[in-house]
Image (cartoon, rainbow, N blue to C red; front, top):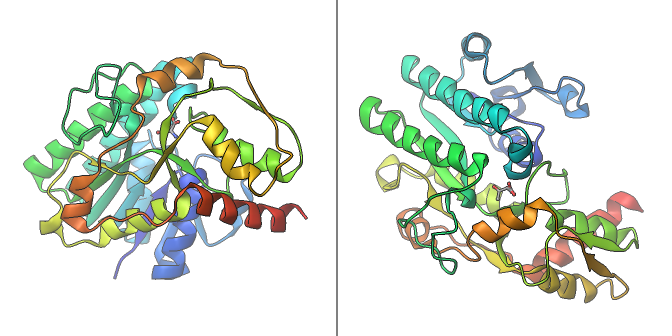
Length: 314
Ligand code: AKB
């Protein structure tokens, strides 16, 4: 019987994965944890307050609920990580060390931990960035993710911890808002479109980034976690890809449904972060090893998000 703990359960990805895992494994087998106590989702299902840098509290929760798997999603993202680099290192690295240690000590079945395209840097190939290439990230977020990947690989090789990971592109969903990322504009633009407001983009024209619809990301993550262990050949983190677009391309896709949407550009410090990242990702290892295939292209994603947001707002 799987008993799953999710950290960062009220974040953009956490809220969607928590719902999906509860549907799949039953409410009583999925424990949501987060540093935010007052979130409305704290009242849905089993909830535990958790600061992931507190190893004792983590152990107490794992013991109390007989946890067998952890989805460790709590992290500070790229943009906020640049304004709080020490905090980003502390949460992103020490949180991961605590989770891997508990998995080793208590012989947990599996751990999931997200990495990011932020592990790549200005020296990496920009187009179809391969799984194994020069990395050299320049953000604290990217540095913590690259170090985390090596830590996961080490815990697998040295202690046999079954830790699995994906390098996410920008994730775009309609259920929860992201916070502190460089790809967040591609979520905000849909809310502006549905509310008939003009959109000011913090990235410049022509800035292409790898992106993915949340439904694909959640499905792919659970597929990776359910794949037989012998299929998982990459124990750092898998490149994971679906779509890639510039601000003008997402605007054009939305304008097919909301022709009046207008966009202006006012690039800020996030432009530099975006320019240091790949524009598209080669994910042949994920496809070959555990059968990854994305389903949503840009227009299908736009249609689905706008339909769902219209139901929420009107
Ligand atoms: C961010 O923009 O920081 C994240 C990411 C690409 O990891 N969405």
